[in-house]
Length: 260
Image 1 (cartoon, rainbow, N blue to C red):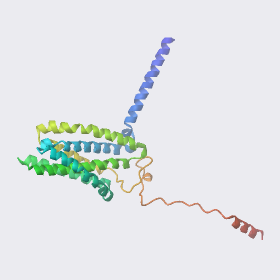
Image 2: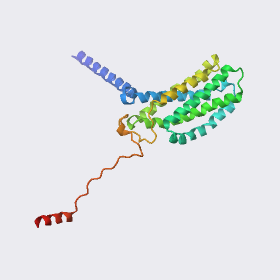
Image 3: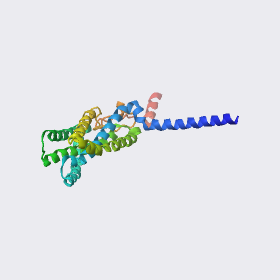
Image 4: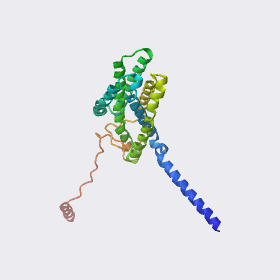
């Protein structure tokens, strides 16, 4: 009897441990197993990862470009001010999605031209390298800032904080690849890191088109992808008024007419 009781106790502990592990795994991968948010979550995770990898990769690529490290780093930090200020007028005029597409394409084109020049010419002027690289850096900085609040507008309150946390995790993980791309791949091909960052930005520009536009839309509070939860701000629902209650004097007047 004692041995059977110990066996049952061990089975219960195993079941409880298994249920805890399953619950933790379900919470971690909740966004990927929930049908209404799976597609948007995967796109947002890729955009965060690509933006972080390109941002840090371009910032650390001065050695492969053979430019002045101190001037390059100074200009990288200085250009972040107009890059972030650009977001507000662009996103309110063009919308979040169109602005992101333009920024990713600008980054991709700038770095692609730089890659082509390094491949075709023996000696590329230092100012040309710096201008093209910093143009891509400015564009990806602006895109990285825009994707922050665009992600919050894409998901309802139920999933918003979870999306931001896991998207940040994807960004931190992808940023660790940047030094290896610059140092290891750059030793093999000088133009290799620029080609990788250009292709990643081009892929992000195409993937953004799969997301919905959130300009002038009310942030969803319930289940995502339901049209009744996403309505235009300039087209609010019409209020419904209850009919006014009859006045007591009117009731008395009606009763006197009936008595007559």
